[in-house]
Length: 406
Image 1 (cartoon, rainbow, N blue to C red):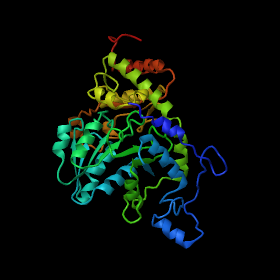
Image 2: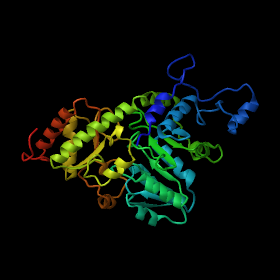
Image 3: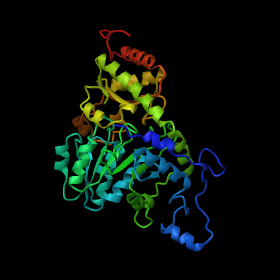
Image 4: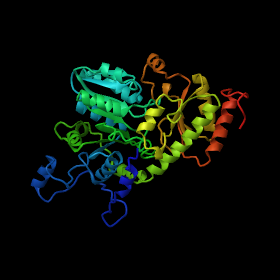
């Protein structure tokens, strides 16, 4: 599949206010009007090209939104101050008292906690299911279900959702399919596969420099306007507005996304294949041993690879912590959450980004204490990186001398 998303982004050109090759940044929280009537019309959403107050919209946020809509092939997009700001706005826009959600069992810990715990305040229930089993998803749907939610490639187990099959199921029951595509920008195009709404944490691969927090909702003009409605829009009334300066920065970083994703994927696939050959328990969608490998191949743009995330199970939390600390000491990356940075980031998700999920549920879904999630960086000499990582594993007896030396 060729989404041509990178071409759509490249074709976007904006001149700055004084002819700059980057759009001018609107460093204002509020905007002036020549007439009171225009202010009223703008507040009611009846004018275009006019700005009232930056919590409603700003030029910088709209420029970024257009680029992200081009990325995902949607009519438009709204940007937010965090990925969770985007996720919670969508959920609360679509669901109300006594409603129901069908969600993947493996999602980002913050998403899980919001659905499992916070939504109880509004009597909104969530059924967490194995999203790779379409029959289980269908069985979980009730008359009160208002959405199907999944991650294209799940956090942290890297399960691959069959978006096309889920979209057909959503159509059968007249439900929106909401897909978090944070782990697979450019590689997977959920809208082309039938999804209705796409969410990203821009904090990760899309920005790529680990210096800000942001999110986006990509969808139809109608839905995005609903989110921004001054009377009933969850995106508007919850106030998770992205700062204009950050929006301008992310827009500039997006210009290299296609180059970065190829390198992240190339490096991750190399390491995954090497460590699997060494006998380690590796999960990576690009490996033929991955249960979702064929699903991923069928719905991805192959030019961007299988993504920059992989997991390795080293057997225990003690070994996982020791390995991560040693790799950080050896300057192989950082013991840190998040992903998409130019350096490799590694963490034990069971005690960090997925700690909101009860331990018994973690074990049930296959999230063991010894699992390390790696966001592989942009290393120029990935064989050198592999050699150094392997040396760290030998020192900690994670790999034994029985394994062939490098």
